[in-house]
Every structure is written in structure tokens, then in C-alpha cells.
Length: 355
Image (cartoon, rainbow, N blue to C red; front, side, top):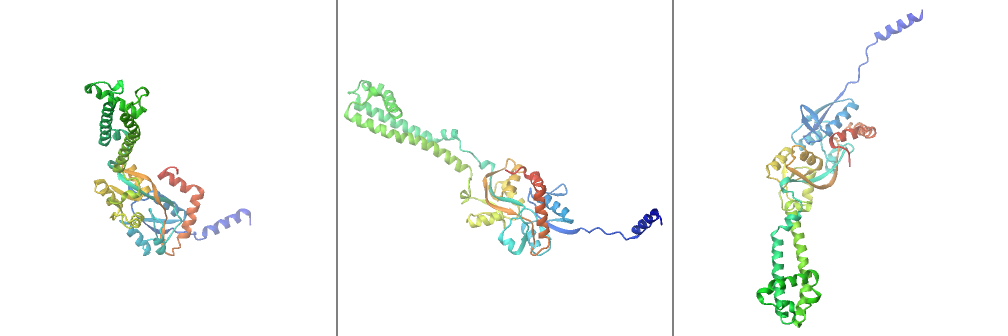
């Protein structure tokens, strides 16, 4: 048999073999809820940081991912707990309570809570506002009266003992006021040292009281600026007591407010909370920092203002029914994505470079 005939027979044999079927994709149901920028519908597509992450995980594990968008966070988790969905992904905080009844992947995002105020309620301390405050004008008026009275008393004590004060009453009020003002500010004039016994005692009292007068001016300016800042904004969690605060029921933010014994309005979902905030009924919101920051950069621009740094650091993860076999392969792929830079690429797409 020739070599050509041998190759022909081998080719014919291989062609007669049944085709090997490709490994079929496993269909997985991923529950999610609208939480921009982690998960949201846009133009008929499921987009967001977590959706991009899940799409890449599914591609690497040959999953046919079907996204099921539900109405509430509670429904999303309850269906996973009952095994009606293979997993849930959005901004799901890893907590001990959830881990007790379900399984988490390794953390996929580091987050925290933040406070959002209405833009109209945010003001910075203003030196000009402090200088134009009624409190400061009152302090200046009181100081003027005290200096005028002090100068006239010195005129009364010194008019027969010192030439500077030897003038009639109608001509004495301004020189006397000017002398008292210079005494307070500069320590007085060397050539106009009081000569009478009462004048010297009174002069010493004026110098000592000048410390009080100057401190009043400084205190009034500082107090006016501080009050303006306190009345205009909330700067920390401690400022939330006694105010109308909104958050989402069952969230980690709600749990935090409960522990701090801060009263709040619990909304069933993000849309309702933000609608109430935009209407001005709720003017303070405590919720996940990345969600609030995305809101003020997009549809909430000019409406909301996020205050201060994040607090109560927390981590998001993908959540599975307890005992799910999909946890381990998901973690392996997430680690691969961390190592090969895919995770960083997705992160920068939605949040920019990490600080």
C-alpha cells in the first residue's frame, strides 16, 4: 500500500467518526437589583461594575448567564436563600447575618457609608458673613460705648491735672474717646500718662479690660463663622440626631443607624428614597458611598452633595445559596482576574483610578 493510499484510508476513517459535541454552557440565574453604578438597565442592556464582572466570570466558566432584575434587595436575597436563583450580585455587603444562611464569594469591592445633603443645605464658613453679622455689629457698638464712657470718665478725672484733657465738655468727647481707644490698642501715650490718683487707677483698669475687649471681637467672629457652618450643614454622624434621615430598609446603613440609635425613615428601595430626597421631604440620606457619589455626578448633579469621608468600611461580594458548588470556581476566576489585570480594567471603567 502506498503512502498516499494510507493517508486516504486514515482520512476516511476519521471522517466516519461521530462528531465530538462541545461542552454545553451551563445556564445560571443571577439575581440583581438596580444600584447604579453596580447594576442598572440601560438601552436594553444589563450594565454596571458588578454586571461587567459577572459577565467576565460567566465567560471564563462557560456559563450562560441570565440576569433576573427584581424589585427589592430583600427579594433578591430571599430567592437566592431559597435556591430559586444561582447567585445574586449588585452591591451586596458581606455581613455575618447573611453569611450564616448563604455563602459569599471573596470580596469584589471595598466600600463604606457616607452622608448626602441637599445642595441648598450646604454652606462653608464665610468670613464676610461673619463680619456682617448682627452679633459682631452689637459687639462693636458695645465697645464704642465703653470706650466713649471710659474716655469721658478719664476727662473728668484728668481735666484739671493734664493739659490734653483741659477743654470744655463739647470739645472733649472725641479726644477723650481717641485717648481711650489708643490706650486699649497701643497701651496709651507716654506723654499723656494719667496724673491724678483716680485717673491712674482708672487707666490701669482700662488697659486690663482691653484684653477682654479684644477677646470679645475674636470670639464673636469665630462664633459667627462656627454657627454659620453648623446651621448650614451636617459634618459627621453625630450631627444626625434629631434630623430627618433617610436610608433603605434592611441595608447595612439602616443597621448602623439602629446601633447608633439615630431615627430614620426606611424606604423600600433606592428609587423611592431618591425621589423623596429630590422632592425635599428628606434632606439627609445615609447610604453606600459609591451609590451616592454616582448619583451626585449624574442625575443628582446640583441636587445632592456628599459630605466628608466614608465610615463603616464594608466589602461587597457575590452571594450564593448555602453549599453552592459555584462558589469555589467563582473565587478561582476572581483571583485570576485580579492577577491578570482584568479586574482593574473593569474597576477603572466605572470608578477611575484608585486613590
